[in-house]
Image (cartoon, rainbow, N blue to C red; front, side, top):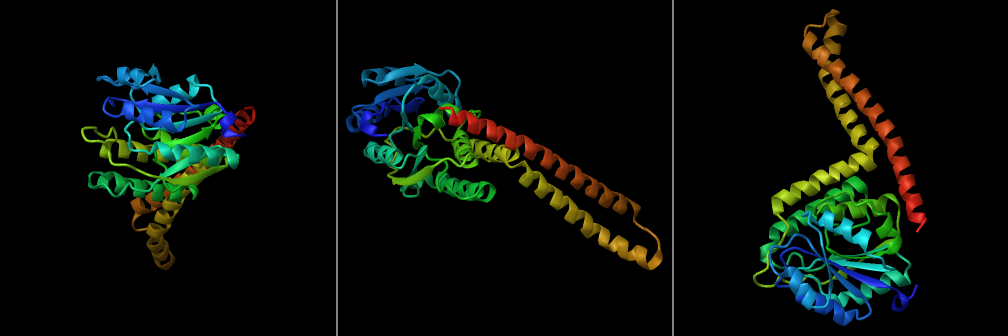
Length: 305
């Protein structure tokens, strides 16, 4: 597919970005004159909506706060061949967009991820940069390799990924959900380096370091339970089994020598841990079968588009 013949939609989620939205809209209009630019106002209390309209964007309103809610609404509303999503805080360089779109079309991909190259350069972002590194390493541990920046806000998508993505998350964890969705369906994706610019003076990040960080962490384990339950419950079963064996070895040794079980509560605990490990393993096997069925259903929905 040639990107010059494609219907391109630029999707910009915004909340209280009156200082930056004009710059973002005009920047993408300059580099992608053929694209339709949509600004989704996520319950702003400032002039974001009016500024976006004056800049020439098509503006919609999403009253439920949270990036996940906005992305779900955008993906449902907008019809296009190629979707580019970018945060409305002017921290991403619009001139990277044509290269990302060209990568998607030339290689027939479903997602191109803009990996931020300057995230650690701004001292104000040290906490965010550290959290980003931790979450990326945790993601690779839980779900395997494939992404080096799962929390970037600069991506390009094919229509079939957008229309088959369930988007059940409500906040910033939706970006992790996108990575897991692509990984579990083995979709063709690529990463490209993009510039990460200093936040304009006076604007503030919507990412709350601890609150959103815990939300992303919780989302990772929820996604692990839903997509790789055998790994999660099998690991818990292994911990229970190892714990049971470690406390049972002295009891077995004493019983072999004396024929007595002097610490009955410990023996009951060891037995309970073994029973619990069996139940966890059985639960993991059952949920693994369910997860595979869900993946097959998602794959079929993807292939229909």
